[in-house]
Image (cartoon, rainbow, N blue to C red; front, side, top):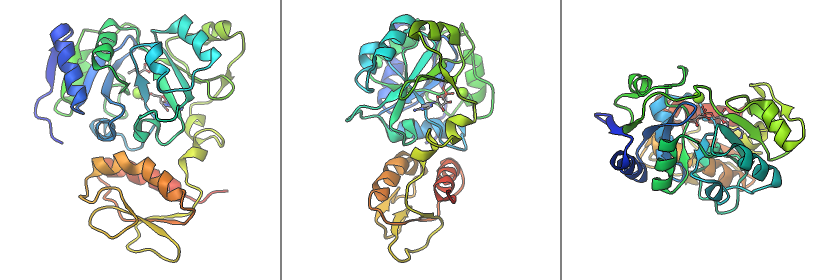
Length: 315
Ligand code: TXA
Ligand code: MG
């Protein structure tokens, strides 16, 4: 989708209501948090989430943080634990993100979780972020509001420089306070520090009365048993297939006869939104998966990156 101008909305009741309305329409709004400006889209709307990747020009799919207005709202989406409760009471609202198992019927787009069965949730402290989330009354997926590979934005001007014309609006409330992204703690298994950030590790350990496991940055997406295992289907995956061979099921794109089509109108945003659910579904057939060629531009690059990983030889 081409957006001609990026609206500047002021952080008053009217601007916040308009921003919530744009989110409801599946459009993207940059908004201030106490850490950095986030690029927000409705976390339940796969095409809105695909548009986030498109606007950032991200060459790969990384799971995103779902921002919610309150602990009560977070509990609608994830399995709550005693440790989550302790950390929420100590640090929410604030620069802490918790990764927890998804509930059944969570309604979150699988593009937010990148197909994982966990969700990163955070209740930001910034009054404008809180007002927006309360008015929207739903989960907002938001990575930092900068083009991929550039530094995180702490002012509306940074956002405009990077994303002008690519997003519907910027909710303008001046500079952010912390400038450092939220600390991410994994609570789906033994408590682990997944990313250092705005809340110090020591404070978290003090509240939990335990030491956190540490991960190196690269581990997050590569260590066996963490994310990688969830990323790859069990079945072999063959790319750029014109037709199936043997027992294969065909994951199609565009005008092809296939078992499941990512987008029969060749729309890359639709294909991105459908990608993880489609891989899960075809994986469940237990048959090898062949995939139609997908153009390598725009969101296609991130789709192909994911598919290449799924197709890579495994030990
Ligand atoms: O301060 C912040 O956290 C900012 C503001 C906007 O809230 N957001 C932010 O988002 O930094 P982003 O997308 O740049 O970073 C999200 C991080 C990624 O490193 C991602 O891998 C990790 O969260 N993440 C998200 N979901 C995850 C999950 N289910 N399991 C493990 N890591 C996850
Ligand atoms: Mg970032």
